[in-house]
Structure formats: structure tokens, C-alpha cells
Length: 147
Image (tube, rainbow, N blue to C red):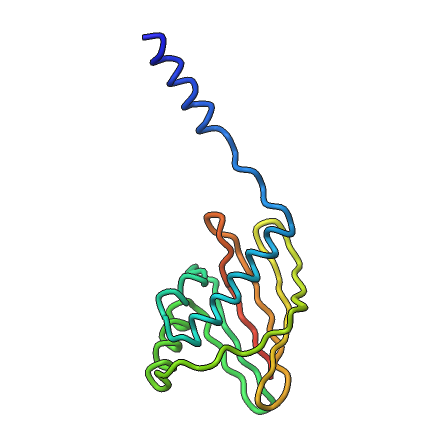
């Protein structure tokens, strides 16, 4: 009986133990990993793995803006549907674009802004991502692409 109480006490203490918070550098590395996986899986046409990099909350959105066009998707369902249609139209895998290694990441506890650039056919493409931390995983909640 004594062992039962000791075991119960240990389990209670263990369940109350909060996980160690991630350092800013660890969070930044995990954010970059999420962004790189999202691009890789999109280029490889692995939709399920691509979708795992995104938040599916009702506030997610995606926007593309060029000199003569502007397109925005204002829900996970709209983003998902657009991506399915795009991959149906262009089913073959594509090369993963080179991304500048100078990510600028601004952390705000459970959210972050990320700014970076990549090469495009017409010149540089500038990206802004808004990230949210869900269940200790960084997810994309907003993507803005300007080319």
C-alpha cells in the first residue's frame, strides 16, 4: 500500500511538471524548419505533409501580390482548395526555390513574424509569414508573397 501512495504522488508531481520553455534560438530554428518543410512538400506535391505545416484555424490566410494582380484566400478551406486545384493543374514536382538565409524573425511568445526573400523568374520574391505555436509546433497562419 505504501508503494501505491508513493507511486501516485510521483505521478501527480510528474503531471504538474511544466515543459522547459524553448529558447528564442530553438524557436527560430523550428520556425525555419517549418517554412522549409512547407516549401519542400509543396514542390514535391506531398499535400498531406504540406498541410501539416499550416494552422487550420479560421483566421488563416494567404495572399499573392504582383505588379498587376492580387489574390487572397481567407480561410484554411480556401487555401486547401486552391492548392488542390493548383496541383491538379501542375501535378509534376518542381525544383525547390533557393531561399535567402537571412530570415528575420520577430518572436512574440506564441506567435512570430518571419521576413525573407527568394529568387523568382522576374526578380526577387519577398515573403512574410505569420506563425502560431500550436501544441508546441510552429504553424503558418498567414502567408504574404510579393513579386
